[in-house]
Image (cartoon, rainbow over all chains, first blue to last red; front, side):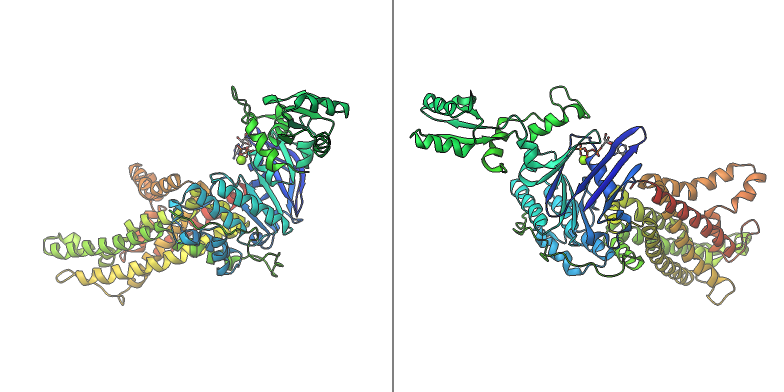
Length: 323
Length: 281
Ligand SMILES: Nc1ncnc2c1ncn2[C@@H]1O[C@H](COP(=O)(O)OP(=O)(O)OP(=O)(O)O)[C@@H](O)[C@H]1O
Ligand SMILES: [Mg+2]
């Protein structure tokens, strides 16, 4: 459980985090979203007690981080910047952390094999690839078998296999009843991983809600259908009360009827369907809509984040849709 | 580099949340952690290796040279000759290596970001500094004394007749030899304190070298009415007095000097501790 109450962090004139109040609950993956420079990493550092809040507070398991009796056994964190001496071996890095919190030596070997680094345990970290370094950071986070986990951009530098592995890891950790708080700027990744999201912009809270609500509440939600007998299908759908509009590639965008109903209707009329897919606003779009006015750094063409591409949407819809 | 595939499971091992053991983290864990950190980086080996080589080697060279030239030395040189100090000449260079290690113990953590992992495990920052001070201090003490005694014995054995040599039994000799190791230790802790304040390797090393090497030059350039009384407060001066058997009336008595030096180190460490607590990591 993480509880932020009016959390504020000021660096000189710069207000990095501005009165954030939110809860991160156990048992679900909570995504932490915000454009670049919106204060995600700063919030994470405040949770860890690395940076002191200018005002407000943040508690982990009911207390400030600094008051935790066994910090690593209670909170595990993968922070944004690398936190590992390149001259030390992976094993030595984890061992020195384990010693600080009286964790057994065998736990070091356990987490190293858990992240697949057991073969390179004695190698100097400086020789590690970005992905290996990231895995070592994850191993360090898991070291104390903590109930609360923070991950700042955990899939940075990972290949698709690694990304899938992290996604499953996060979900598994949450399923075990842990509190999992993960920031990412890959919105489509969050759609696949997070159950709940905390969205911030310019250090301020914009939304805190279930992912399904974030994507589902958008007017961009519709069902896309394709059929070789499009005109007949269209007439039937409209007769059933749907609003139909042409979509890209000669498909139809249907609003007002859900996908099962459309499928049943087509089947009853013997109309073949070549496509039937729920189109939700991707998290990216929902997120863009939410943070439009809160983007810190406006680029020329790109505003904080790359514009949502149709490819993202298709990926999301074919395997990422949540009820 | 091939990597084993990560284990395909979401459980980090136990599959359930283990209850917390009683008690809390403390100094013992912090000490073990610091000891592991110190012995698992190469810079420790390098700086301590240089300490040993310079500390012992330079004294040996100085002793051998003195012995070879003894008959041609002036009477004044022969009368003021201090066999202990000659054999411990290397200490005054080894101090740089020890100081660099003292700096790195702290700044390497900031430079590499390890400090965040360290403070995640031990949020009590002054405890981290105390643990560093104890572990590094003990290592510096052991290495410093070994170097000092080894340099003494090797140097005396090279001071062959007609050059005079001395033994541990002679007045003040044990003090000077033990003092050599203590001097390295306290100076190393002073460097650690500087590093806790400055937090950057280059900056902290510059400050340390400045105090040891540049400050004496500045003081020497001052008119003697001002420079004279200040000179005794310089760490380098205190070091020379400590490793000498002959006393110099312008300097502090050896133990007083060590006390002054320890005062500097303590003040810097306390300030460093306060700043560590106040500043963002
Ligand atoms: N130590 C610091 N000193 C001064 N300003 C800082 C510091 N850390 C962060 N900031 C500023 O605070 C703001 C928030 O930064 P932060 O790194 O928390 O954002 P973020 O959401 O993690 O961004 P990103 O997605 O790029 O990682 C930025 O404008 C940043 O420049
Ligand atoms: Mg960040």
